[in-house]
Image (cartoon, rainbow, N blue to C red; front, side):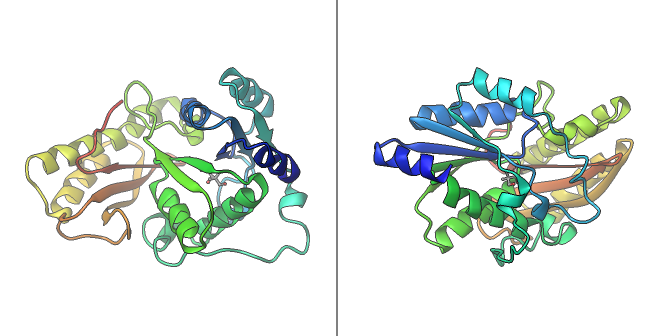
Length: 276
Ligand code: PAF
């Protein structure tokens, strides 16, 4: 992959990169389609990165289907699929990790210690292998997007990070490979995440700026739905991801909720369109 990327660069080709863990859905495809518009060569990696899963998390049962992914990627004319084996990414004597200190602490950083260190480490490794000019991420994983941008700025990496709007199911549920885990009777409860983001935006549009008021209303709504167990509902400043009391600058409401056994996340930047 590294020498292929070198040769593409020598030919003056622009490389757009979409890192993924596979099990594609429309959200992934929209990142790939966007990548296609931005560069002559689109590289998509498929790698379920063990370093970003905690010991009690779903690494071994994370959905995988390479054949299906290859067909889907082909349908949007992806040029290269990079599918590295574990022992090439993390050989036996592997010992180097990159840690973004502050923006990784709040939100998912609290309930998933070490997760973002695993994410930034694999992304840095993949950037060094794929050598992209542009890398594209979905903003459903808002904290991931901010952490990667921070790493790229802090380490002077020569690539542009682009974040794209969350792709949703027709009813509003954010697309995620983990939606596959939802049982039939949990699916409507999962929709509460989107409905509660709409409520938050409505309160904001009505002039509410007190974070605790919005958070309490959102929590009340989520608790009403069956099978839900809130990990967090927080309102943070978008660059620092620090909690805010009053919404004064650009802020995001971010949620993590377990629906049955499935942990789902979603978010909304106040004032932006919350579209399906
Ligand atoms: O968002 C994901 O799928 C993963 O966290 C990523 C960015 C591919 C790193 O493993």
